[in-house]
Figure: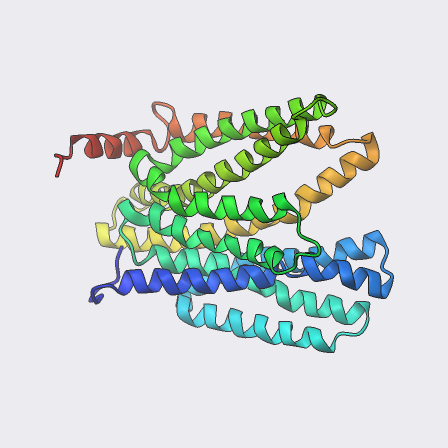
Length: 348
């Protein structure tokens, strides 16, 4: 729900500034994936020490997202995001004074706070837009993920094509496809994203299996870019689902309350859940590479990890359909009414 007495253009301004801030924070959050290689060489770090060093900011950002979304609801997005950016800036400046492994780890802890900016921005931006525009708005905000691509682009000595294109494709698809969830419903879009991701993993496995044949690399590369693309769509649709779920749940949980009270409570619950969800999602940046590494170490290839991901995506398809999108599911009537309303609108 849009705050009362909002000046014309204020939601757009809030979205633009939040997206810029998130882009900067995301670039800072992933900086250790670049400078960590040089630090490893300078300090003679083992692979385990190196993994902990580049994983520390990811873990910090993941954990702190749990509380930042709630603080945003209590103290306001501008105040909380300002504190996050100031703290991350100080930690980044202190990197110049780091001289050994413990001091770099300490700096990494502070830099990781920048990763918490996502839950702040999502909770803040969603308040400026009505529910029928939240998917598009949050998709545009999520384009700040391109900060990871910027970090890799300005460090060409360690850049590889997919490392740049992956975050870029994901960020662009997220920003350009948020309207899809607004039109068709976040539940249905998320369901088909999981289906697409399952096919994408099958494609990756296929091209790994024929890796010695001509063109196999480009098929493998295309499948991974496709996975980044549909992940961006799913990221936007998932965060569109949460407010829709909570709006409906408030009717069940607070039947005696009036509609404005239920809406306000739904917004509060959504902010907390988005913070928690984004925190759990951020752990993927730590555990997914670890899964590949463990699979290669134990089996000699990444296939075991990919099969595990495939099983996970299929389970997500089943759960999303059963809980949310099937006839009688939590979001079925909401999303089909929305779609019907869109189809019945007269052409302009």
